[in-house]
Image (cartoon, rainbow, N blue to C red; front, side, top):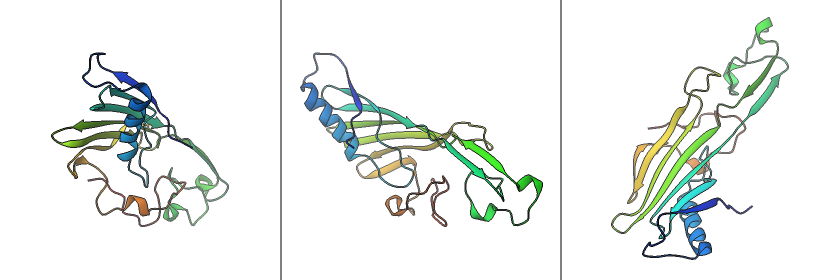
Length: 184
């Protein structure tokens, strides 16, 4: 399906360059499509975008609610993610059965795209989930916070030793076995 966020125009009506609403909307959406990073656990494009009339600045806000439910019939793990080495080998009352609901992998993010004459396109991005504390505490955790300018990324982002597009899509948050997904 086609990506169609809600685009709001900000700024005064006497901006130097004005576009009709469709052209302005399409250019703003293209800026976000072109700067979107595909791959493992990357944020989707924003649901709301606030942009200036001359497309020099656009701020996108987005997120998702990710509710996972599971029921272990036999051999329940003491972990909210599916980690194979955590599967108990011996049976006990505490590992008999377990019903789990978890929304800690839900995400919120903010992304700004600045089209500067001097620096070119500048992207400022920050996102968070709710895995900052112990299991089921839902404390916000900063995942990424970076600025991209002239081909360089400054800030906290996924390590360069990780190919985001090469990882398969998985149901569990941990991801594929032996995948190097760390933040630097």
